Every structure is written in C-alpha cells, then in structure tokens.
Length: 479
Image (cartoon, rainbow, N blue to C red; front, side, top):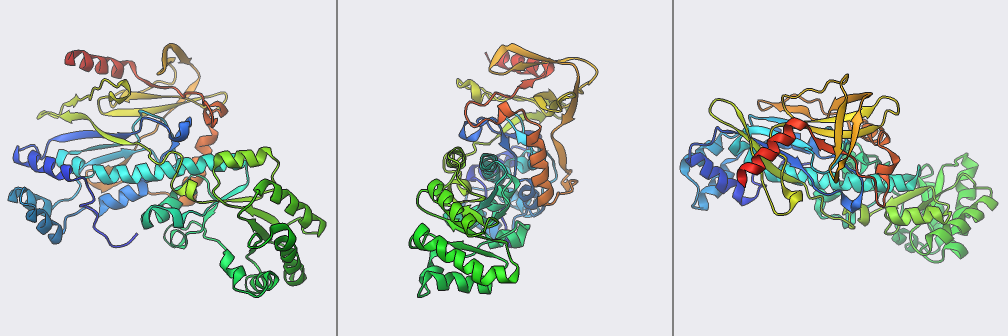
C-alpha cells in the first residue's frame, strides 16, 4: 500500500529460533510448512481463500535494512554472523497456494512453503496475517452476498475497521467475496474496487431545509443521486422531499438512475412504505438502499419480511466479521529434508484430536462429479501421488469414517499451484475482477447443502490411503 519494509513484522520468536538454527548449522536445511485452518467462521460449510496477492508483494520485497539490523543488534542476543546473514537476506524457496477466491475447507493446505528453515520461519507471521484477515472478510462478504439473493451489496465499513490496512485490504477481500463496490476511496485507487457514496446526515443538516439539501445534491451530482431520507422523518418529510427533488431536477433531464437510502428505524416497514410512495409518484425505477448494522442474518430476515430493498450497504459486521472475528489459520511444520534430499514427514500431536496435523509435503485434489459438475470431495495426497480418473476412488467422511463415497465418474483438479520457485515468482496474478468471477464460479460448483448458513452439510476432505498410513505410523512411533 505504501513504502514500508515489513520484514520485522514477525513474532520475535521467529528471530530467536532463526538465530538458533543459524548457530547450530541448520540454516540451509529445507523445511516444509502448511498454512491451513481448523474451523469455518460462523459455523459455515466453507471459507473463501484470499490474501495471496499481498503475500506475493511481501515475498518480493523481503529484506532487512541497515536500520533493521541495527535494531536487532541493540537487543543484545543475536549472533553477529547471523545479523550479517540477515543483511543479505532474500527468499529463495518455493511457495504453492490455492488461487484467491477458491472455496476451502478445514484441514487442507491453503498455502505450502518449501524453503531453508530460517526463510520459512521468518515469513510465518505475515503469511498468516495476510491470509487470515482477507480470508475471514472474503468469507463473511460471501455469506452476506448470498443472503442478499442477487441484490447488490456494498462494503461500507472503513470507519469501523481495525486500522487503515484493515479498511483498505478488507474492502479488497470483500470484493473477492462478491461485493459490488466499497465506500473506501483508497481501495478504488489501489485495487480498482469501485468506490461510491453520496451524502451523510450532516449534508442534510447543513441546509435550511431538507428539500434544499436534496435539490442541491441532485443539481451537483445528477448522475449519482442517492438521497439519505431519515435525517428528520423518513415518511413524512424524507421520502416526499426526495420525490420532489427527483421530479423537479432529474426527470426533466431524462435521468432515471437515482435512489434513496434508509439508515435507521424499521428498515422492512419503511422500505415497503417508501416503495409504495415512490411507485405512486411514478418513480418505479428509483432504487432503495438500506444500511445500518446489517449482516447475513438480518438480510435474510428482511427478505422473509418482503422488504423492498435493491441495494444493501454493509459496514462494521462485514469489515470486522464481528460474529466470528478470527479466521484461525495456522502455520505448521509438516516435513524436512535430510542431507540426501529425502523428505521426512513430521507431525504435531495433541490430546485435542483436531490439532493433530497432517504430515508430509502434499497435493490437494478436488473431485468433480462429471454428471452434475459439482464438487464432491477433496483429498490430501502425498506429493508424489497421481490420481487416475479412470479408476474408482473411495473417500471417507472425516466425521464418520464408516460413511464413504466411491467416485467412479469424476474429474480431478489439483488445487495448489506454484507461486514461487527458487525465490522467483512464477505466478501471473489475476486482476481483481477475474478473482471475483472465479470465486463465484467455484462457489456455484458447491452443493446447496454445503452453502447453508445453518447446519451445513460437511464437505468430504479425506487423506489418501498412502498419506493415512504415513500419519498412523508417525502416531504409533510416538506412542
């Protein structure tokens, strides 16, 4: 977003561990780390991966300045040879990731790093914050967009976001999730997310009369007039004054693209009354925009009540994902290479079964039914496995291993694609509109049961037979 060196945006223990690896002669040892999450926000059936573009920008600019080295030296605990190593530091490893906008599920890698262990360790914090934040907002935005059922959703949350980056990058993520635009001007400038907006209550209050405020705005911005009608009394003055301004200023110019905004009160009741008043005035084309602490649940309720709303402006509950404000992605070591280049799987165990990791350098396959074209299961495989689409494949339900699907007529697609190879970016970053379109297309390939807001069907994510045996052996060896 601006000229900042983010290399020290890392947890301090990344540096102390790296210093230790360096002093023990382990700096060049290749390690494999996975980024994955354990629980879908809001109890949903899937999440939306986002944040990869910011990861690419970060890796491309990864370096330690002289000022960074001086700061680390001042801490008095880092080896001077390690600081010299950092002064010429850059990323030389490989990164694989799912494209932004991909629907993803718990336990499967969103991103995998293969790199010398110090390099892999130092990038952990930023990779997690970039992917966690944007995946959280993109997931929430998609829930809200689906609740709106074809009506446009605009992101209005900058003033309630957690900091400038939360506002700017959050609006980008919301666009990936399906929002049509944002109120954040800087996100439009930097990322091309369409920015829009008209007036606040203060505009109306600054004029002697509500009608004068509306009339003046229509004269100044005839192609962009959405009038805020609830400053004083929505139905007694706001809507009638808006109708008068539209008829006196805009209709004589042949302009019919205008609207009103409701920002308080009983939105369902007011929208129906306002719609009736607008239609009776011959303004059937006038759109009604609703805002005021909305989320997917309130929007669903408004739809059930028959609210007459054309556009939803959603702020704080979207940009902060206030109902589930943490995505929960983690970064775990899954393998290392020995001196001969052999990949040795690693596992983390826990009394909490959900925290036991899936070891090894992996591929992720998504299987699509050839008849319905729907996604039916994902499978985590060892890196050297290939899937034969001409052979049946059995996938087990992770929550009930006695339940299984045998796939016979399917297409397999690898989800993880190369992003960096030997420190060089090999991935052509798509533009944001293409990411948004891809996201919608991929979500449309999920069964409706997986997309339910309440008690969604659990999508199958299984381990291949080979990977399952490796995991069981590691667990048994620990015992």
